[in-house]
Structure formats: C-alpha cells, structure tokens
Image 1 (cartoon, rainbow, N blue to C red):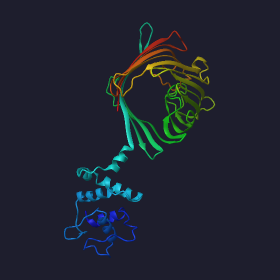
Image 2: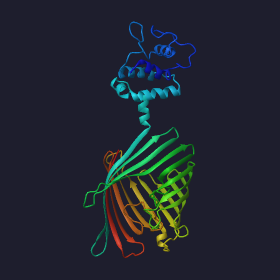
Image 3: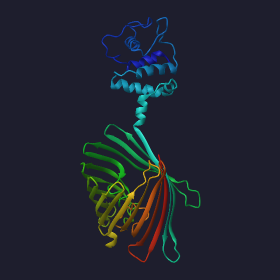
Image 4: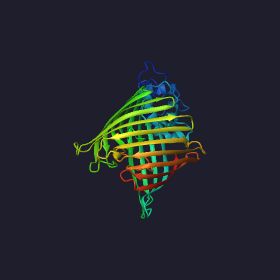
Length: 410
C-alpha cells in the first residue's frame, strides 16, 4: 500500500483538511508547498495522525503495511472534532482494518457501538403433548413431539425506529423417518416509537394475539395514548390456520381497539373484520372482543376475555369464546427457583376462536385447564399443562390433553 493512497483517503477525513484557510507548517522536506497533498499531509502531521522518518522526509511513494495504516486509522479515530462525513469515512476505514486494530490492542468503539445496535434474543424449546379422546379405547388422536429454535433480532435504525424479526426452525421428532425440519421467517416489521404515538409496518402479531388471534398480519398498525391507548390496524391476513375460512388463502383484516391501564387494573375492547377476496359475500368474519385483568398483589392475578363473532357456521355456541384464569406467582426466567401455577376455564367456539392461542384447549372445545411452570436454572424454564374438555357441539365427546415443555432462553 502506498502513502499516496493513504493521503488521498485521509484528505477527505482529516480535521479541516479540505476547509482550512491556513494549513499547518509542513515538517517534511519532500512534500513541497505545491504538492497536491501538501495541505492534507501538513494537517495530518500537526494532528499527530502521521509521522515521517528521522531525516525529516515523508517518503510518500514508499509502500506501507496494513499495520502502519491501522496505526494511522487509530490516531484518526481518537479525534473528536470531526464532521459527520469525516466520521463516516473513519468508520469505514476502521471496519476495513478492524483485524489489525484489534491485534494492535485498539478497541474499535465505533464498530462496537454499531454492533450493539443489533440485539439478538431467542430460545430453544422441546414440546411434547398428547390429546386423548376419552372413549372406550382411550385413543390418542393428536400427538405433538417438536423441537423449536427461534431467533428474534432487533436492529436500531435511529432513536425512534427499530426493525424487528422472528425466525423459527422446527423439527417434528414424532415422525418415524428422519425430518429435516423447516425454517421460516415468521415476522418482520419496522416500528417507530414517539411520545404518545407508535407505528408498525410489515408482518407482525395482530391485536388480541394473547387471546384469540395467535397469528400475524402483513400491513400497518398505529397506536396512540398512554393510560388509554387506541389501536388501528389494516393488512393482509393469511388464512391457512383459520378455523372457518376453509377454502380461501387470505383476507383483508381490519381492527380497531382501545385499552386502559391504571394501577392494578387493565382492560380493553376491540373489533375485527376479515373479508376474503375470493368469496366476499360469503366469507366475511366480524368479531368483538372484551378483556380485563386485575392484579390483587405481587402473587395473585385474575384475567379473562369474552369474544363473539358473526355466525359463520350458524351455531350460536361456536360463535362465542371466553376464558377465566387465576394465576399464582409465575416462573421468572432470570431467577432460578421461581415458580407459578394457574387454573382456567375456557370455552373456545370454533368461529370465535379463529386463530386459537391456547396449548391444551382446542377451538371447538370447552373445559378446565390446570398448569404450572418452574425455573430450574437461570434462563431454563419447564412448563406442564393438563386439560379436561368436552366438544362444544357434542358434550358426549370428551378428551384430555397432557402437555410438557422445556425452554432455554438466550
């Protein structure tokens, strides 16, 4: 590498090199006042970024090593009074010579700061569940044996905006033959957070994903307010996991909601519409949701929701969904030895629970659920659930589900 190249690069980044009226005095005898790099080299020498040889020469035509260049970059990085454009150039040089800088013991703080702008979270989990029909044969109607690996990066764009994503890799361990699994991008959205206002753009979890809409939508959402928060969302909804849209692939999804939180109480109401473009006169889904949560103290909490949909199946029982749950304590992933337990009754009408979010009570079922969780070690949490349910359409059809999961958070 030649110093003439170094001079060409640093001319654009050195403090005041392009704009100084009076350049610093030139210490190098072989860089005359008429030289094209005179001002830049003089300023670099004055700022201590470059040094010449013992005989007072600069020897700009000589080749230099990457380590010598890295030393210059390190000195330039130490300067604080630089413009935004100059700083950007310094950062690029620091990235180019990062290995040499690290070997020289120089902390590339700018690059470290940029790396901190991307945060990674995720988990690895194993789930086993059995859904058993309670008939004479006690048949096993549904068996889950699954490994999941999830990554959830969040990248800072600026002080207000972030880009978020979720990537899932699944392997079905219940198959007799080997399963290579699948990897999919579940969510990706940009989020801007301002005072009393927030916006999402992309593919993200919809409103009421904690009760009956455990799904994602591709579109936009705006929310505003503090104690009382309004929410508006519109986008394209995938219908593959829907309980009632059997033939259509997607629908337009609009929702509006209002949530209130004050002290120990939280509550909210919302309204959803899904209209399929394939058969708009037939497959139009409308649903209203109300929910509430009250925390008695640090250990006890009670929560519930009620939802009612348009009667797509014509059956009133399936047009309603509701749940009441009591929670005691709860496992904290950061604190080993913490635990929790809950008891719930759920009625999940198939039409009202279009995208069911519960593990052991399926859409179209009603019944009791009991469960507990425990943090074995920091970031290692185990969960057990059991349900005893009936079919909503036919109460003589009974079932129970056993569910176990262990999660490793990172």
